[in-house]
Image (tube, rainbow, N blue to C red):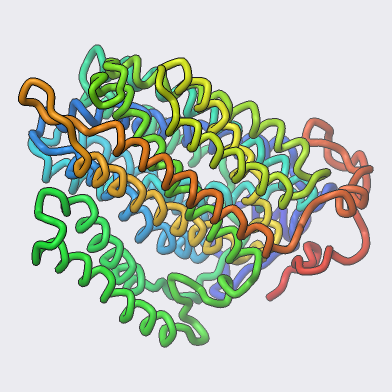
Length: 530
C-alpha cells in the first residue's frame, strides 16, 4: 500500500508532530468511488444547512412581527450568523489543517446541531440573535468540505468536481426553499428548526462512518484566536451601525460609536496580524496567501458576489410578502419561498453546464460572463413591475451567480498547495461572508429609510427596493472585473494537455496521468511545495 493510501485509510494511529504532506492524487492513485461519495455527502450537508436558511429568509417578516422589531433590526438575524461565520471560518479552517478535516467537520456539525436546537426555542429577539451567532458555525462546514473534495480528486478533475458541488448547492436551494417554507407556513418557523436536528445528527454519524481522515496535517501550527476576535469585533461594529442606524438615528452617538469602534478595531487587527507570523504562527488572514494573485482575485470577486446575492435575496423576499403599496405582491411564506425557486433552478442547471465547460473555455471568460449576467439580472429586477417579470429575471440572476461561483473557485483551488487548502478555502469563506454580513443590513437600512404609509401603517417604498437592486448590480459588475487581473488556470491550452484523460464516470487507471511540469503559476501537483 502506498504512503498516501496508508495514511488516508487509517483513522486510528496518531500522526507525527511534523507536518504531513503526501503526494497529491493522480488519475491512478485516487479512489473514484470514495471521492464521489465524499462529494455527495457534503452536498447532503449543504442541503440541510440550506433547509434551515431556506425557511428563515421567507419567515423574516413573520419573525419581525412576532418579536415586534423593525425591518432594519430583523436583519441582525442574518448578519449575526454571517459575522460569526466570518470570525469562525479561518479558525475552523486552521484547526482542520492542524487536527484533520474529518474530525473538525464532525465537531462543527455537532455545534451547529446544538445551535439550531437552541434557536428554535428563542423566547425573545435578543436571545434569537445570540443563538444565530452561535449557529454561524454552520458557515464553516462548506470550506472544510471543499478542502476535502480538493484533496480526493486529481487536479484535472477538480473543475468538474467543483462544478458538481455548485450544482448540489443549487439542488439544496431548490429543495430547501419550498420545503422549509411549507413547514414554516403550516407549523411555524420554530418547527423547521426542530425538524433539522435529527438530520444534522445523522449526517454527523455518516461523516464518522464514511469519511477518512485527511492525510494533510500541520499539527505544529498555532491558531490565531486573537486575530479572529479582532476581525469579528470590527465587522460586528460596522454591521450593528448599519442595521440599527435607522432606529437609533444615523447621526446619533450610539450609531457613530459602533461604526467608529468597528473601523478602529481594524488597526489593531492589522498590527496583530503583521506581528503574529513566525515559525509556528500563522495569521488568521495570511498575507502570504493573499499575496498570490489568484487568491486575491478570487476573494475580491466572491466578496462582492456575496454582498450582491444577500442584497437581492433579502429584497426579493420582502417584496414578495409586502403589499402593493411597497411594490410588493402580498404573498405568504410558502408562496414567497416558492418564488425564489426559479433562481435556485437556474443555479442548478447552469452550474452543471459550467462544470463540463470550464476546463475547455477557461475560468476568466465564464467568470466575466457570470458577473455581467448577474449584474444584468439585478438591474432587470429593479425594473420589474409584475410577479411574472420578477420570476423571469430571477432566472437571469441565478444563471449568472452559478456561472460566476462555479468558475471562479477553480482559480483558488488550482493555485493553492493542498497543505494550505483548509486555510485558503476558509479565508475565501471569510471574504464571501463579509459581503453577506454587510449586504443584508444595507437593504434593511434602505427599506427602513424610504417609507410610505397606508391606513396609518408604515411600509417600505418601492424606491428602497429599486436602490437595493441598483447597488447589487453595480458592485457585482465592478467586482467581477477583478477577474481580469487573475492568471488563467484552465482553458483551451490546458484542456488539450489533459484531453486524453477519463471522466469522473470512468474507473481510475484507464488512462495515464499527465506528465511534464505544471502550468505556470500553479504548484507542481506531483511535488507539493513544503
